[in-house]
Amino acid sequence: MKAKNFCLIVFVILMMAVFFTACAQVTGPDDPQDLPKDINVSVKYVRIEPYYPQQWETVALNWTYGDMVRAADMAKESENIYVAGSAAIKTKTEIKMKVMDVWKPGYVCKRLFVNGTELIFNGSEYGEVVFILHNDGTIEITSPK
Figure (cartoon, rainbow, N blue to C red):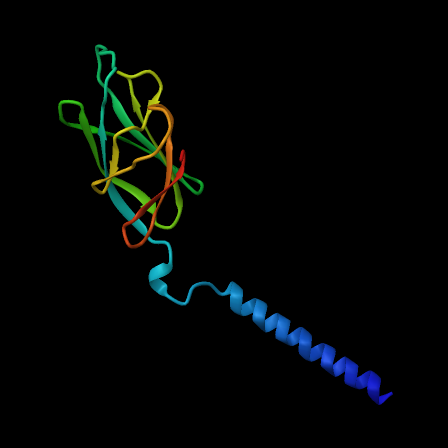
């Protein structure tokens, strides 16, 4: 009978150890600087050829993160350069971004700059770019690669 109680005690101790180890791993990062933050970034778009001038010139920025969908008109800074002064995003989160330009067929994301850093990626001129902005300001392109 004593062996049965001993095995039960050992089993309970092992289960408690597993429980506390699992809880320690789920609690998250120890460094508060590593948590996602809500920030605003500046975005610049440079239109490249070929493009087809229309009567109106509309350039809009679209971006999503999590379940948030956002859009903003881009102001003309100079010939073929447009800016969106403030795009609200979250760091350490996948951001999908594209520019809609009526002078170009389809969606355009080539020559897109976030906080002054060009998003350089392989892929066609058309589509969207997916990236993660880390808390230290570095940008990781996740798609297209």
